[in-house]
Image 1 (cartoon, rainbow, N blue to C red):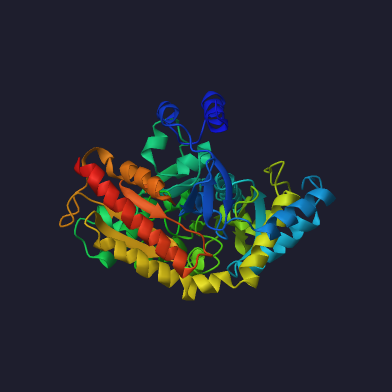
Image 2: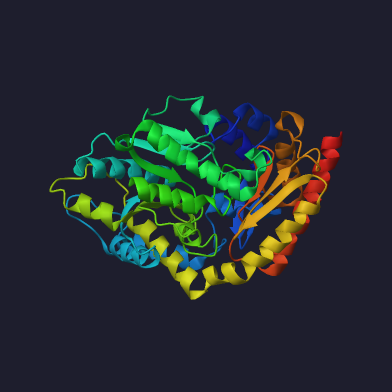
Length: 450
């Protein structure tokens, strides 16, 4: 048995993968990734694949970043671990907290560390509930979220998310409500884009009034829905959401686990959309994916109340502010600054990527191509004239498989294909991504025609 076959056999026997049909995986055999460099990952047979998803929305700086690896190694040699309980701290967590406060929107100057985005969103709930308790409004417990939003896989995170296929497999918490997503291509039914954006945003106001102002704690949303299909809201959407939250004094939560740390050409997407959240939940790209780390940036108005409570905030994790993870994050922030990467996304590689990505809309299989920053989505349709979908949702999985054949990672969300490529791509590499995507679409069209 070859080394690859042995690994695939052991994988099938012993490893349950996230979000996976394991009967199908056992038949198809897992792709074993052996190494990575630049914007490419390599299978066990050394075949390169252009990583159009930056790992899992996280390796924004690409692979082979020795600066981050060296920072982690050095920290492990000096202080591999200590907790932040019992009046203890350490330099990496303290320095990173200061650095994050410096780059975050002005009202966010305090951070709580977690291990993941899921835990960050769970933690946000704890903060929101405690805040309103201390403000003398203990009934303000309900969190409003969006259908097809994604906020993680823990019980609370998945409850916040609005993905029905996940909700079918567990009982969610009972203090979370959902409103519609601002998905203009899929749900506007012919409405003008700006009108649609306002209408969907105003569902938040309707839901607040339906539930009662004294019962609603917060509204949470991704600035751009990532796992839901790179849903870019109409320009009218976020200003109206901000107005409603301000008017009813509802805490606004930006889940920036995907959009944070340069993805849109700003440090945080909240800046891009000019919103002022009370919480930013982050993870993924904060360490370029090199170490697990998440957290919640907390507004001064909330943090001051929590700090002045006079008793414990009864929440925390063993690895909150792990020194090696914090060292990885500091090194990542250094690279973002020293290489001027966010400005380049805003003024150079982002616009170039968007121009090439929009050209995919000319393909006969594409109903819409949309992009922002270094995020892109294309809608696969059977009829380009009326955006009719293929039957049984077969187009997305077919296209995903064809992408791998041509050496490209694109993610299928139903019949929407999405990418979040590394921010450090060159123009030549963007051209390669475009060419491989077009080739995969041609192969997909041929396969669907059969």
